[in-house]
Image (cartoon, rainbow, N blue to C red):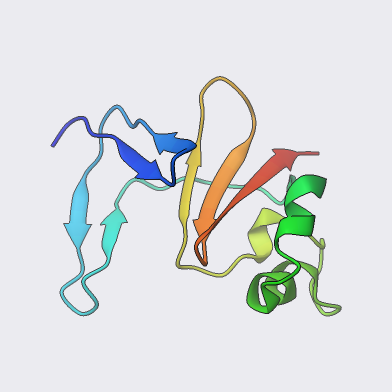
Length: 105
């Protein structure tokens, strides 16, 4: 399949130009094979920091006392869905049924 559209809720959509599907037989999870390299320069926006306060797992991954670079995208543990629009520097992650936005600092 060369083109597709993936919807995350009603507000978010992912429009990849080319996507390669691969389902792992062990856990039936769909994975995109092309790597996306991130740096620790992307941090969770202030607006989304308030949205994750009720999710203790996300809060612990991003802001626990033992975590370096609090709020950095590099602190999130897989699995999650990550995408970025070519029009701006905002990286979006869908994890634990929440869409999180990270911006470059």
